[in-house]
Image 1: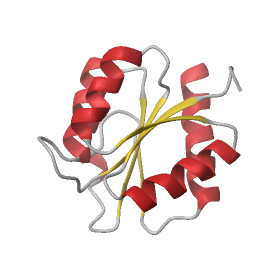
Image 2: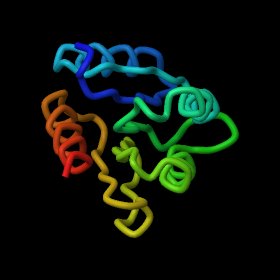
Image 3: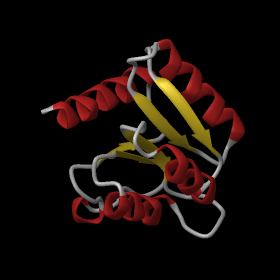
Length: 125
């Protein structure tokens, strides 16, 4: 598991976060968890060299939402790929930084796993 891709999962709903983390770990990803963008930024400050994909919800409490988090991460750590999710309106393609992707909630585990694999392979090119 040491060479497994590392995903930073940012989700404020504990049950959704736990379920997603379990599904990603079953797919052989290493998962770091954060309940909001502030915690996610602290994780990235300490471990940005390890994180390959940020998987974040859009609507969260705290100092910034998932879209702003994605923008900050892209600006500071451009090697981190972005996967954004929401049960609400889908952001316009030009609102998602870099080659980031959007998946609507509710999502299937297989969809998330496939998207993250594709994003990881983008960074290996």
